Image 1: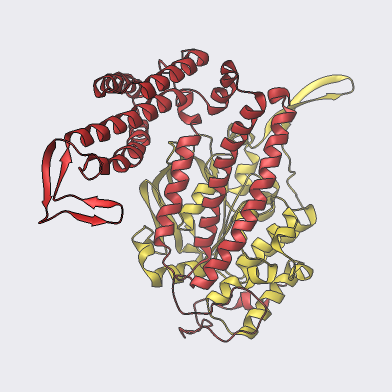
Image 2: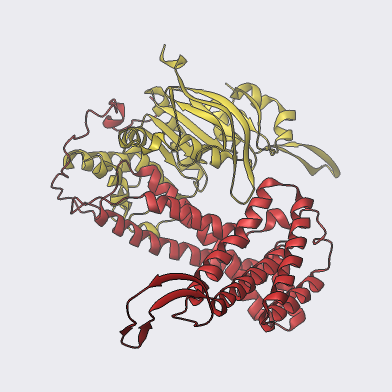
Length: 300
Length: 272
């Protein structure tokens, strides 16, 4: 015998020793993880949510896999790309006409299409489109859509929606007799949506083409101080590192849970893990900063 | 008789991460019950991803995985009874112990799975104490997890899995962070677990560990594919193959004033 294993490891683990009783035994041992209530916590939303959040963070902040592909944007000098981005973002902010914004949209769609064709990768195309359309929908369209209604921006009716017998007043709010989508309101919604689309599309188009580290480094041409660039760089690394740690923690929890956990247990585990993750990412953060300094980045 | 039963069967599985990074490509292999099976390969070849797939944490984009004659899929893991049975008999030790440990103190960590299984208190205490004794961590039981060193965390992570008494033990780089004495202990424990009928699956790039365990070996290359599967003794002798998959390297040094180059690896086959 090489080493004497504990007795229980020699027994068959077919489930005979496991209590079939749904009630938790009245444990007296000193551990913080004994369930108190019978309420069960559904992990399904956490399942999808954590994976999705990690996926989003990684795809937005970790562009290394695309930045080395051989497309027309990779060949342009990073400083020119940065100046182009600043110029286009200023243009998007100052132009108040839907026609001008739409022109920029068409140009950006054209440039993006060439990029997608050049990459000729289905996953790249899917990821690129998702990166632009999701925030445009949520931050642009959905947020600005209420402005289309006449109770926010009054104007010429386009589509009649609801008719009340009389006008209603609540405190400082007023609900008109007829609720409709107004021409002026819809213009505002379209303008905001196009602005959000243009800003995100132009940023993704440029940032996609270079590793984030290089891009942050190039900010020196617009006189961003080295300490700020250093913080930006560490923040980017920190976000990726943190999102990976969270995902791995989730896997470890999933791997060791047999049933839907008790709420009280899950709160305690999450609390402890949040603390441990904070400690771990803080130490990683410090190490990353030290490693960057030791390699002479920004000479801080 | 039992040795011929197939535990895992992987049929042409591929896995790509959401940011388009390929982790596994067209992996097909069989792992027998009550065997020691090792997956070796250079860093980033997809070993950990394969472990996550074997533990039912992620699911391949292509291909299928059969475990004990049942196909592992997201649908299968919606069946609560199956999850309970699978998780209580199939346990994974993560490469990074920091992510695996989530309880405030070592005792809670070791008893976590047992409390979930609603074992009797006496048995929980016995299992925790015996396992702690086995891994020489009895004096750590009341310590906070965050105050442990890397090696201590690794031992606690292994102990937290052993208390459960799983039939299948997956270990992702089990000897990383451990000092040579602790590495020797882990090897002995793994060999004894195999002797008593457990299935052991490990990933590593430590050829010394492979030499000690003499497992059935799957070699993965940097293209995330299987280079070969075979007996450890045969593969460890194949220097050309080990060079190809970056597990050994050519190394220059000076002998009597003249420089020469030879193949170098960080292990030595022990012969009687």
